[in-house]
Image: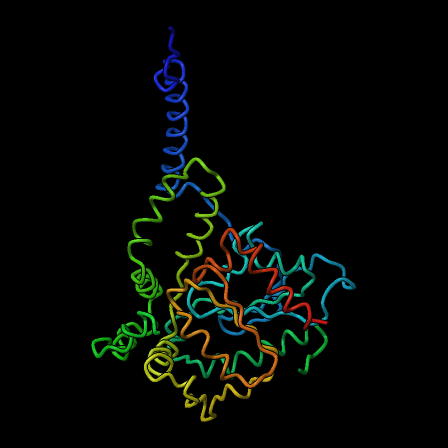
Length: 330
C-alpha cells in the first residue's frame, strides 16, 4: 500500500512557499525603509477648490462642483472643523474623501480652514471665532452663492477637571497650547493601540499598497499639528469641560447667554459607538437641549475619526448623511 507524501513536507511546495514569503518580506522591508526614511510622500486634500475669503489666518474655500447647476442642490453646505488638527480630514484622499462624495451627490461645498495661530493670536477665544469670524464666513459664502437661506464622561473630563491641571499656567507659559501636547494627550486615551498595535497592523500589511496608502494619508493628517489659541483653550477647559456651561445654559459669549433652545434649524447629530474622545453619554444629551423639531440622531459604528473616513464610511455613514441632507437641500 502506497501513501501519498504530505504536501506540507513536499520539497517543491516548501520551496515555493519559502520563495513567496521571501518575496513578501523583501517588499515589506522596502516599504518599511521608505516609511522610516520619509521617502513615501502622500498628498491629502487634493479635491480642487478656490479660496473665496480670508481674514487673519482663517480662510474659506469653495470646492469645484462636479455636476452641472441643474443637478445640484440649491442649498450649500459649510464644513467647519475644530480648532484642533487640520480640516483636510474632510478631504483625506481620492476615493476616501467626504468632500468628494458630497460633490458627487450634487452639493455645493464650502470649507473653513482656521489656519495656524501665531503667538499674536493667543488671546483669541470662542467669542471671537463665533461672533467675529462665523458671521463673516457665512456672509462670504452667501455673497459667493448669490443667495441667502432663511430657515458617562470620558477620560478627558477626569484629566481636565483635576486640581493638578493648571490651565492658567499652561496658557501663561505657552501662549497657544502646542498641538503636540494635545496630540499626546489624545493618544494617551488609548496608548496601547496608538503606540503599539497600530504599528504591528501596519507591519503585517506592508505588502498591501492600499493599506499603506490609507495609513500614510491618515498619518499625515494626524501629524499635521495645529496649536490651540490660548484664550479659547482655557475657555474650553474651564467653561466647557469643568463647568459644563453650554449644557447648563450658563455659557456667555460677550455678555449674551448661549441657549441651545434657540437652535431652530434642521439638526443632524452623527455619533460613533466607539468614540473614546466624545463618549455617547456626552454626544446624545444635546438632542434634548436643541429647540428645533426637525432633529435626528444617527448612531453609527466606528471610532471618533474612523466613523467618517474608515473603509466602510462611504457605504454606511455618508449615504445616510446624504439622504438626510438631500431632503433639506432643495
